[in-house]
Length: 231
Image (cartoon, rainbow, N blue to C red; front, side, top):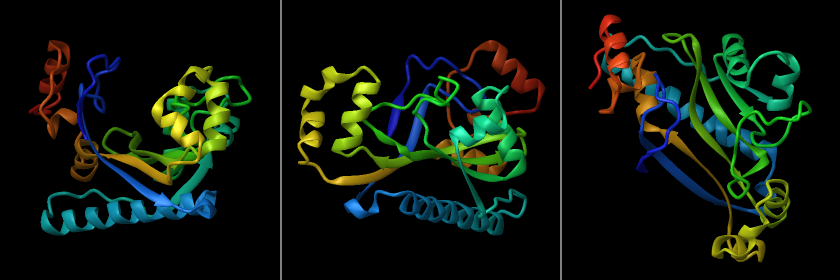
């Protein structure tokens, strides 16, 4: 998937107006809609990324990036309970300092604080069975999201989430109508950022080092001063 996010609110080290992802979708059975299946899929993706990292380091010895295959699984509520006084992004930074590879689960649902960790469309993932794959970027010393993914909504979870989100008007739309009627297959899927993965594997500090983008003069000057070459 290649797209332009015209209204991207934040342009920084990890965010560009240009988005490139490997988007994938896999048909599953009703019995696969559980946390164990989700975790197994996450472990497979992380293993593939780490194997790729090993190959890159073997081919290009100057690259020294090391990634952990040991995934730490935690829910957004558990993370909020650990760091109630921090913002969601600050919580992610803290947990990846403790565990280099994290899968943060249940994104989109409201937490006990009354806020959600992050937004997630009600007609996309099941908020109980989704999450983000986070690695720790030792270059930036922060959490580094490489993939947003999850088991997709089924008729029951779509019905519930549309009501919670105040989006009941979508029920008459072709996709929503077909899914609510049980006419579409159950799936799991997600997106893996292409440029972000290149950044992570190469140990880059800015996404502009691996993709052509549009940057303001302040960003260009700051990167030049730091010895960062933007494409």
